[in-house]
Image 1 (spheres, one colour):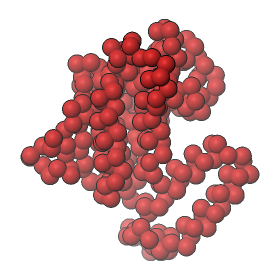
Image 2 (image 1 turned 120 degrees about the vertical axis):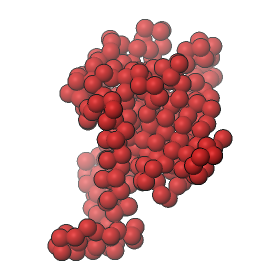
Image 3 (image 1 turned 30 degrees about the vertical axis):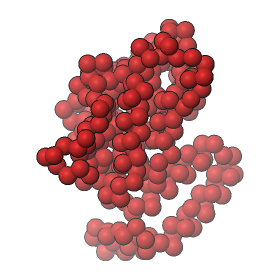
Image 4 (image 1 turned 90 degrees about the horizontal axis):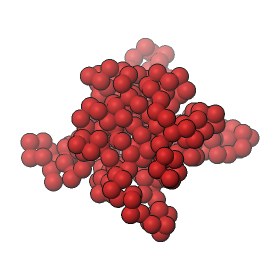
Length: 269
C-alpha cells in the first residue's frame, strides 16, 4: 500500500515496514514499536520486499535499516513464532537469508541502531556493511538462555567483525554490551545522538553518492571476497579490479577534477 501524499516509488508502507527514498538513500524502518520491532516471519517478508525495491531502484545508492519508536532497532526474532519452530523450519534461511541479501547486494548497507539490538535484530545489523548507533543502544546474542544458538548468522559474522574473543564472549555469556563497548570492539563505527541518527546516515549516503558508482560496490565485493580467500588470491583479484576501474571514464574524470580543483561529474561509465 503506498502513501498517497508522495509518489509510490518514493514512499511505501508495508504491513510491518516503512520504506522511503530521499535522494540517494533508501530508508527501511522496521515498524513494530509495540513489540520492540521483534522480527516476525511477516516482517521478514516485508524486509525482503523493501531491500529488493531499493536494490533495483537506480536512484538509490545506499540502503539503510532502522527501527521505529526510538527504543529498539530490533529486539530479536518473534518468540511467539520461534516456540513452535521445528527442525525443518529451522533449516530455512529465515533471518540468515535477509542478512545474506544485505551483505550481497552491491549497494552499501547501513544499520542505524537506536536502542535494543539483540538476537535476530543484531544478526540483521551484522549483515550490513556499516553500523551506526546511539549512546543508549544495547547489543546481545542471548539465544543460549533460551536453549538454542543464534541461527541468523551471528556465529559466523560476529567473530569476523569483532574478533574471536569478543565473539565468544558475547555468544557464550549472552550478556548485553553497551554502545561504548560496541564502538571499542568495532561492532559499530560511529555513535551519534538519537535525534541525529538519521541525519548522520543521510550524510553518509550523500558522501558515498559522491563517489563514482563503481567504487563502493567494487570495494564491498573486494572486502567480502578477501575475507574468504587466501591473501595471495585476494591481492591478485584486487589488481584485476583496479585494472578494470582504471579504464573507466569516471577514473579520468576523478583525477582531472582533483587536479583542476573542482567537483567531479561521474557518469557511471
